[in-house]
Length: 212
Ligand SMILES: [Zn+2]
Image 1 (cartoon, helix red, strand yellow):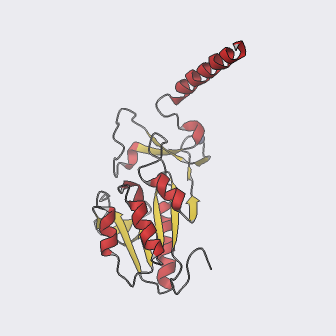
Image 2: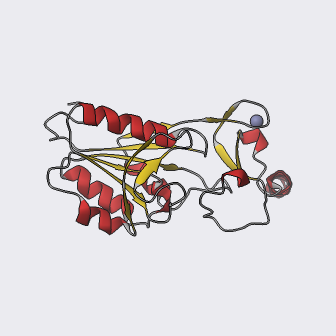
Image 3: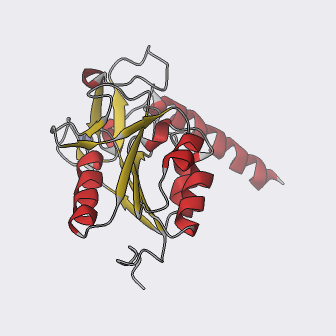
């Protein structure tokens, strides 16, 4: 049976589309939704109520692709709003949901629903973003998509916040605060210096070991 479910919808699945900002996650989500709709499968699209930067009731990508969506305040609300007849559930900006989102997604998949979620895998510190680590672990299929590093043009996997003084993890819609960066150009808060200290410590530890 296909990983992506069948027209009968008997086989549920969990797909994660993730990557940094500006990588086209929402476009990819909308592309998969449109294909399901062409296949005449009933699709419902959700997004966190916090993400109202473009439109209250639509999922809109940076490149202005859009599709109607239901804004919800919590992950449990998704369970309450999914119809029995729904075969595909798509969730955008999934990193903003609470930790229960992975339980909700599992429940839907077990019911035979194909679940497609899209979100930032890492925050601007390069750490797993909210519930994303759990979602990536339980997914049947993961697509990490890349943006382009604004410094060197290499594939970018990191979201870099240009103003490091701003410490909130969630700043919605402040697009000009962020850039996509490759690993070498995402020096989060002087991480290079931290790494240097780390290696100095490692060396002193190994010296001690030699003395034993
Ligand atoms: Zn770069």
